[in-house]
Length: 458
Image (cartoon, rainbow, N blue to C red; front, side):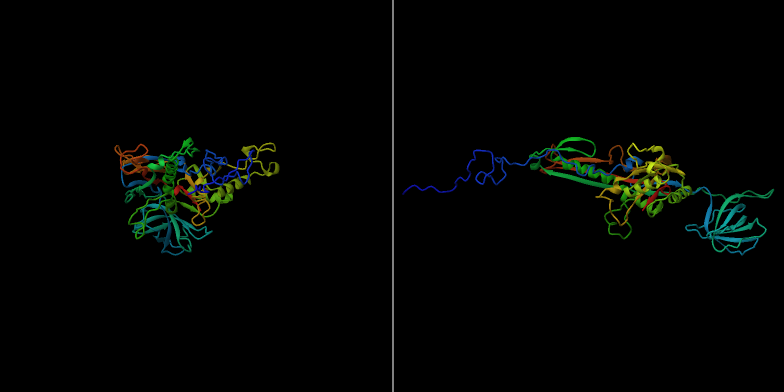
């Protein structure tokens, strides 16, 4: 039988005498022999800049340990006595009248016999008022004898009453009864946060290096641990955002069976803080904020953390106060002139109190609160400094920042920020799992002291 050679595999490449692409010399697949392999950049391009949004609590608060499931503290009540929903059983020109307190949550009045009171009509634009001395107190009622000869004014509805002093005749007994200090006890409980990164042992043997610059300022080369590093950064962000957004699980809710929740900053401000709707674009609107702060703690210095829109509104409002420079852009202390770059931003101003403005990245970030419409927040006003409260655990008065985080810790266990490795790869040897798992855990709660001094702008 004659020899027969198969026609395949044949050869189809015809070398070209010069370096040019021809139909005969073109290699259609990318393999390690191809001269047309793609050029690659080993450095990762940071197209979103710094992606971390944490820093708010680090700027305005502190972190301190706690060893209990429940954190409790006492805040002072008001020093003076005032009721704003009071009705009179008397008529116009009566020399005496019985007043009844209808303020919410009041079971007995703190006004005592012999005290002098100021009475003011609640009707808008009314100038009617009386002053009198209390002659009898019973439950929610107290009797007032008026100092004015004309007797009770012609009040149209409810009145406001506050105590301004007392008066006693010669040779009489002292004040009847005493007033206990008014205080409120607040509490919060920590929640446990967890996260995990995992990579199997086989993938760890295929090393591919990537040059990176990380959000925490470090730079260099990472391979499979790049994802572990981003998991850690993401978890650190969640440690802050959970303290801002968290809410307690309500009774009969779907979450109550598996989660208890905790009181985050926004929840507390919605329920115990001052809330303002809309952007503040005029000084008269800021005057309303100042007037409310006067009625609260009157903290001298405050920091406003705002989104980009509110930041621009404040800049525009302040710029409008001085428009006498060239082209209407002389901003006083900035000393702008025609030959220098125009600074259109402000970092603070004084209007009754000192207000320092800072952009809050969390409100602008597209993956967090930036761009949402339902429940949008424009900014938060936070009082600077610290306040004195009675710490129920320590059993004594203690100075605390208005905002601070309490994390579970004692001498044997610190749960501020735990991380550990499980598996049999990457240096770990504590499990038969052919992988490396990096676990993260924290247990913490936010304490918002003096929420009546905060403002939430929506």
